[in-house]
Image 1 (cartoon, rainbow, N blue to C red):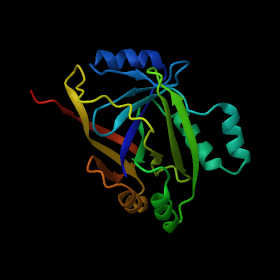
Image 2 (cartoon, one colour; image 1 turned 180 degrees about the horizontal axis):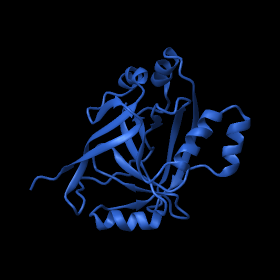
Image 3 (cartoon, rainbow, N blue to C red; image 1 turned 60 degrees about the vertical axis):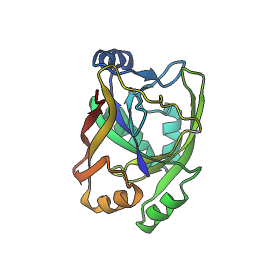
Image 4 (cartoon, rainbow, N blue to C red; image 1 turned 30 degrees about the vertical axis):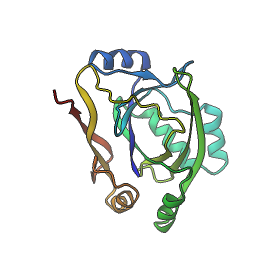
Length: 206
């Protein structure tokens, strides 16, 4: 797996979009109508997701609790309560399922929940993908890559940034071997801690 994207919590999505545009990034809302997120894509490698709220309505949160998926509900609650800034990490594969990843998680006795997701983006592309949420909140969540590639080709942001070159992610020491087995992306730097500590950008060379 590779790093898919990093989550950046915002309190006001529209204000955050404006602020990141002022920093020279091109920002795209996640959905045509009533978006709860926005994306900063790069042609290669991971992107940034600006998230104003957990991507599930309250009734789904309730159902997760009563169906015995309380750890998944806790993850979404954590997303809701986290302060503004970088906090979460997602890994991605290019398969239609998580066969290999499930084997790894099962070997380490890590429970998880799999679901499907879809959204229509501002370009009218109907994006579809699957998600895997480990019960352990200090493990990144996983996704299959979109059925349609939404990333721009050969794109450099107005501020000169062309990619995310490194992501520092903290977790429990016992989980680092699991993440290393799941992910072989050189962008990811693991350490003992809790969540995304920092990231660096790679700039276009003139």
